[in-house]
Image (cartoon, rainbow, N blue to C red):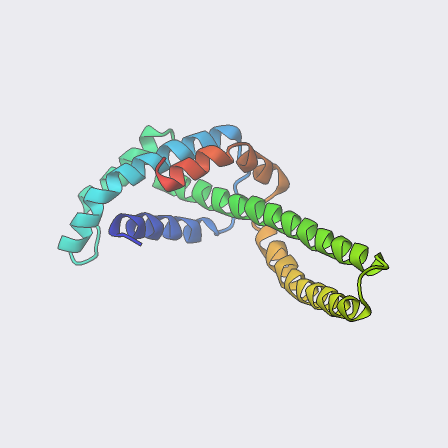
Length: 185
């Protein structure tokens, strides 16, 4: 990861961790729009701050902190603390939305693979030795999937406790804007 990416990641990680404190934010469309605007502004300020951090031994100067504070205020946040809380809420909801979509896709792929194997098992032209290998493959797929899904369900449950369905829905509506801000597009 380049220097700018590390600075942005460190700032947002700190923001996310601080935002995990009591007082979970229920996101609105306005929150996410302000968040994207602030994120883009922080990302724009980050290259200079990254250089300043290197010169200053890794400690941000008051001037650098003022740049971030100004960026979030210009985006409509009352202060950096409010941005931090919204950042955490967006992060948890974004994670929940993306992981949920991935799990749904995986469920579909596993079910499609099992259905395809079942079709081959029902085909009288498929040799018995091949059918035996297909049964073994299907069992391995289902066993591995069940093991991994168990862990994924635990993780989704834990992260789900840090957000709410309405916030996830808001983030899903704005996911393209959020992704564009994260990638600098």
